[in-house]
Amino acid sequence: MFCSFGRCSPFCAVFYLNFLTKTMQKTVFFSVVMAFILTGCSPKNLYKTQDFTPSNVFTNNIEGPNFDQSGQLFVVNYQQDGTIAHVNADGSCELYLTLPKGSTANAIQFDQQGMMYLADFSGHNVLQVHPQTKQITVYAHSERFNQPNDICITKQGVLFASDPNWKASTGQIWRIDLGGKAVLLDDTMGTTNGICLSPDERKLYVNESIQRKIWVFDVDAQGNISNKRLFASFEDGGLDGMKCDKNGHLYVTRWGLGKILVYTSTGILQRTFTTQGKQTSNLVFSPDQKYIYVTLQDRKGMERIRIAK
Image (tube, rainbow, N blue to C red):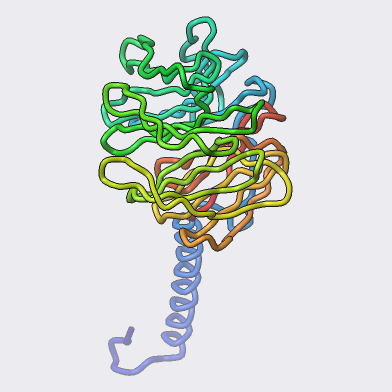
């Protein structure tokens, strides 16, 4: 800024200095505001657990949280066993459906067409729920099922199911092909519980609750598993649901300890989250993978942890 006489008078100099000061103040303020908006949250809240739903609105069999393709969250065993809840963005809940008598869901998955699949541990089935009509049908059943516990699904709609026998401390792994045909993949496991696929669907992770071990298998194009190897083992606590994020990190719930462990795909422990409740039973990522939503059986409700800015 120059004065019209080609040189600055003292008045012009003072005016120019005030102009610069006010401009810098506005720039700093704008930068602070934008930084806060871009981070999306206060740094002190990152990695901290917060209540999401109220406590005591689910039963102590709360499990299986999952989002459908439209971003709606569903969780099993709302108010009484044998129900599915729709959980709103503010943490409030409403009854979505009630299962037939004798059925109790423990896990939820969705295929690309929006069909809901449920591991029905008390009915010894895998159920299918139509997204528009809510019609419930038996999708898969075998006389050799113990009690399907957890399920994961490929992009093509093929399911993998853990199937523990808690009394005998043994377990099985099943593949449920399109159309509902159940194929037994391994019947020599311990108490199989959490199960999930890597993002490229070439690895299958399965844990054993009583034995406190996580195993990883290779998965071929036909859905067969091989090359079983130990991924991690523990001396205390239990193991429950697991999920892989988009980068291949494995999130593991430590039931009874109130912890969620985060491993790299090579088995290196990267981070530990601590929840308010102790009986962490399962988790799911928000669609943008900025949060994890955790089910807690002792609190009979859910907590939420922000994991990314």
